[in-house]
Image (cartoon, rainbow over all chains, first blue to last red; front, side):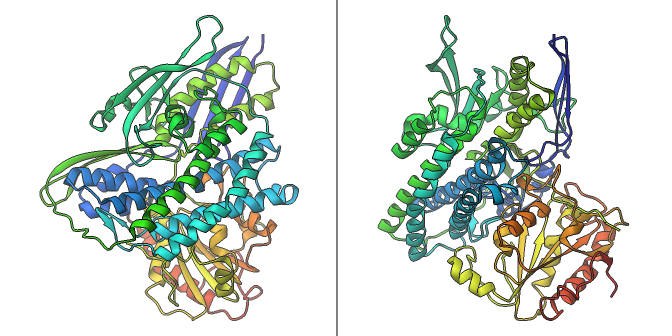
Length: 444
Length: 191
């Protein structure tokens, strides 16, 4: 029987510091951990004592990739606490910005971070010589997504236009029309990306688990919705995953019932579990739960990519991200059409401050993000709680590893190591989103 | 709230300008880019330096950008410029608050990186170079941090180094021409 010891110190191409420890003796897993070595998060403590209108400004600095998502969750939670209902125009513009963020994050993940694995390169840099057209295309798509976010939020990162109950500054209709043209023109690049990813081989591995995402009856939910859990049924005879499953819905007030946080010894980041155990969030969870509401072009892409919902292969999260790029692009075009038809209006964005408590769940690229605030009569934040997607996925990644390892023990040590790293990367984890230190080596 | 402003007035959505306009507007100019997370104590020194620079009068051909926790997108911020000065906290094994002018070659190669989305400054510069998008002259101003962890303020030694780091960048951007040969490399900053 195989004995394997794998110790990956600092998984590359993920955010933050993450280590994988695996010890197998005679075919039995003795030790398997995904260690998180990054500092615990103290953002809640930073928010307490601040004014209601500062929460978004601080939250948007938590992550460089999910900056708009943190802003959106923060604004919606604060609006819930203050009893504010934003206008239709505000909601449409926020949805448009969020689509831009999903596109920029997914393009970055699929074409810059995962593609090197599938194309057999150690990082994206060698691909600039060996697959130059792919990198040029990736940069075009990334640039467009950045411009998309910047048009609505004022900057592509740490946006300055978003605020409670509206916007500091509204985009010009002419600029929206120009973005629409570029989104339409990007369909060719997206199609080429689909063809590229469809030609690459992803590991064949399945584990039936629980998926959690926002859902709505009338649209593919990103901005808001009901927290929804889905656990697929499997055929008793052959184990085949059925389309049917257990579906449970939780109102936002009960978000702590789904994201039940626990402290584990080997990780500074908390683990979460629902009453059923570990669960997955992110693109794969969203597509599994909301497949029927995808844009028809996104469903076509799913078919071209061999994706059938519900899909239990965590490596297919990359494919689900690409399916969402198609959906976000097409839905952005539809949102811009709607905005141009009704015209961009200056609106009253005043806010009446009162004491209250409110929570919000927003789908950000890596999954469902919860923000909750309590403010006093003066609008001062007296309590804050943030639960990030990666924190929710960590427990599930460990369970996936436990299921995967026995299936790959015949592979070489290096292949096992690569497979485990690829599994972690498939979840697109953001272990830190926080530190960004230059590492300097003085020569001579 | 931070806004991206420069010694000349940039449009609100500088990323939205068409590429041609963007590049012609950047040709021959210098960009100073502050990188880091303001919520992580000394890690935010790069952002604090550019906030300070925005209050000062700089040469007309200098743009100043607060890039925050940027990763790959650094490439889009520096492309088209003749010169880029990147300001960031840097682990150099020096006493806290030391300011050094560095070249890209001083950065440890992208191995295990902890930067946003796995794309550290070193790797982005390498990719920009490979794609022909890197300014001819890139210098980094590194400040040795004392305490990197959740905090909105800087540690005492790094707070004390802030003014010197600002003057260091000012001196660099006032260096005429492309400055490539004139900029001190990997040496301590002496005022």
